[in-house]
Amino acid sequence: MKYVFDSQIDRKNTYCLKYDYAVENGKSADALPLWIADMDFGTAPEVVEALKKRAEHGVFGYTMPKKDYFQTVADWFKNRHGWNADPEKFICVPGVVFGICSLIRAVTEVGDGVLICQPVYYPFSTAVTRNKRKLVVSELKNQNGRYSVDFEDFEKKIIENKVKAFILCSPHNPVGRVWTREELEKMGDICLKHGVFVISDEIHADFTYEGHKHIMFPTVKKEFEKTCAVCTAPTKTFNLAGLQISNIYIPDPQVRKKFEDDLDIIAYWEPNIFGVTACHTAYTKGGEWLNQLKKYLAENLGFVRSYLKDNLPEIKLVEPEGTYLVWLDCRSLGLSDEELQTLVEQKAKLWLDDGYMFGAGGSGFERINIACPRATLKVALDKLKSAIKS
Image (cartoon, helix red, strand yellow):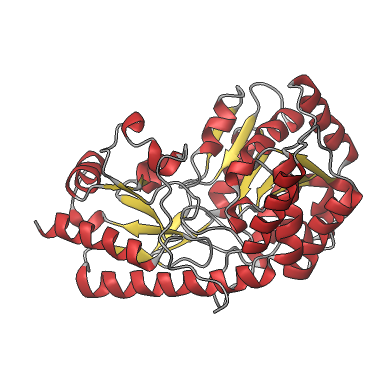
C-alpha cells in the first residue's frame, strides 16, 4: 500500500480533546482513549503538503470560498455517490452539529417537536433541547443485533407530537446501519406526508463496508429534494475535525434564506482558511488515500470480530455496515450501566463512549472507535479482556 496506517503518532500535548482532556472529563489520566470520532491516522499527505504551502504564504486574512470550491464539493459526491448536487446550494459552516442547530432554528419554532431515532449520536438531543424545541424519540428496533426503524412508531410519534423536523443519521452512528433505498424512501414518504422537514446528517457517507452502498437522501425521490437539507463534511473522511469545515446542502431557497439569516444573527460569515484549503485538496487529491484507509479499517473490523469470538464471546459485535465506530453489546455481562462504566474505565483503563449516552436503547452497550493502528486496537481489547476475566 502506498499509504501507511500502522504508524503510532503521539497526539499528547497537542491540545487534543481525545488524549489531553481525560482528567477534565473525570477519566483516569492513563486511560487509553477510543471514544470521540476522530482518527489516530495522519490525514492524506497531499492535504498536508497543501496546508504547508498555504502556511508558507504567511498571510491568513479573511477567507471566502469561490464557485470552484463548491464545484469540487459537488464533484466529490457525484463521483463517489452518484449525487448530482447543485454547487450553488452548498453553504460553508464550521461543523455539522453547528449546521444542524442552525437548521433546527430555520425550519422550526420554539416548542415544536423534533424527532430522532435513538440510540443515536448524542449531540442530536442537545441540539434539540438547547434550542428549546421538544425532543421526540422513536426507538430503533434491535432484532438479533440488526437495527431497523419502527415505522409504525415513527409515524405515530410524528402525529402525536406534531413533529416539524426529523434528524436522520445516515449512515447511522452508533449502530452502524447503512440505510437501504427502501428504508430511506419509507422514512421520507412519512415525513413528506406530515410536512416534516428532514435534516440528514451524512457525515459518515464515505465509510461503508463491502456489500453496502450509501445513498444520499435527496437522490431517493425527487419530491424529497426541497423538503430536506444534507449535512456533509470532509472532517470524518480525512480526519480534519480541528479545521472546522463542513458544507450544508439546502435546496429550498426559503429555508436557505432563513439559514443564512441565522448565520447573520450569530455573525458567522467566513470559514477557516486552512479548512477550505484542506477540503478542496482532499476532495481533489485524496481519493486513493481514502480507498486504502477503508481497506485498513475493514481489516481492523475483521480483527475485532475475530478477537471477540476467540477471547471475549461474552461481548457481541453489532456488525457495522458503515462508519469506523463499532457498537459492542455487553449486556450478557449482567452489569448495570454504572458497573459497566466502572469496568471499562477503572479496571480496563479505557475511555470509550458508554452506550446509555446515546439514549435508553444504548443501555448495556459501549461504542469503540477502530480508526487507529491495529497495535493500539489490540492493546485496548487486551485491557478489556483482562478486566473482564479478573
